Length: 319
Image (cartoon, rainbow, N blue to C red; front, side, top):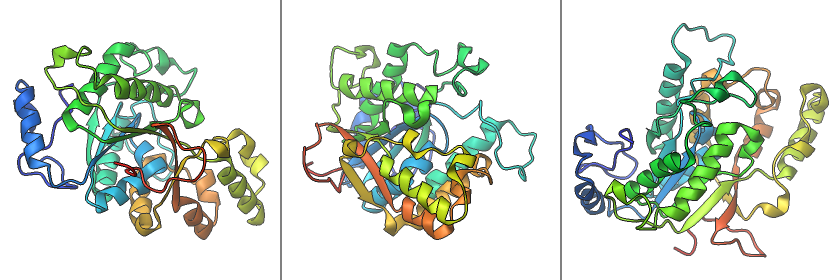
């Protein structure tokens, strides 16, 4: 996984590597020692593992920005470069490959959020379910599960995160790459600490302490539908059924208030111009209503198992 690189000798919280550290890739133990010595100032490390450019901003941009501001190291791992995507903004015309556009958009978002990355796993976007892109041998969907897990294990062992966030098992809305990312990230979380697995990487085992799935509660979508009706928009005409969106409310274990970084979250979101449709649900809601929905981000704590009662307010609680 040549594109995954550790922190550099001059790197501090929220900064990206100032030089290409791939020259050191054949000395994995040296890389780990370097990272441990130079990144000690971080309060902890949060790793987000997603499928495409824009996943990080649309779902957890506020959380990533908030922890970066608080002095945590925040690392983004992305499986693909969004090669199967389409330009959603009709005012944006370009002959440039969509993957180039989306890489540039993701770089913009990472800089605004103040996070490291993106570090690409090197797979191709598989496209929406049932499309020909699903069958491409280089697609993330077709990737061997053990091999893909190994790439994420390598990233975990290099960056040594305390907390990992990824998609819930349904991938939000069933996108095959989202589902695959959830499976691979979850397997890697459990295997990265096993010295018998992927020993050929030459990297010391590392066991992250907490695993979260992003999980939007159904009550939020019901509230969105109500605000649409108040604005004179029929959700049904827009193909928006809140009962088919999100997760059961009782699944939500953790809520993060990101109102203090809402401006960063919004600007990172807008970096992904190619993926924002003027006819989408987000564009249809009044600005204030949208800001209200964006100020809280929701998670399902998987490891350790969430408490039966009470809502957690900090991903690093208990560490």
